[in-house]
Amino acid sequence: MDIVTATQGFSAIGSEPRMEVLQTLVKAGENGLLVGDIQQRTGIPASTLAHHLKFLASAGLVRADKKGRTITNRANFDHLKDLAAFILEECCADVETTND
Image (cartoon, rainbow, N blue to C red):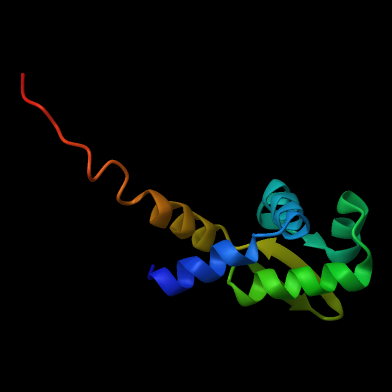
């Protein structure tokens, strides 16, 4: 993952409502949730929720899978794992090791 993609991902979860939506979808697992279910669990109004889902989807954190007239929103677990790995990939790289 490059720094631009990582920045977009972290920016997308940079608000409390979007973080709440993302956490709700993560809790739902691969089954995902319909917009009404997300709205019921978060209390976010439908129009605002649509905006947050679009923002999360544009950063690749959420997938909206359409089947007929039904749209199921799912967390993009692969992208979330890559994002977490990005922030940790150089963990402790500057820590000096000492040989006793």
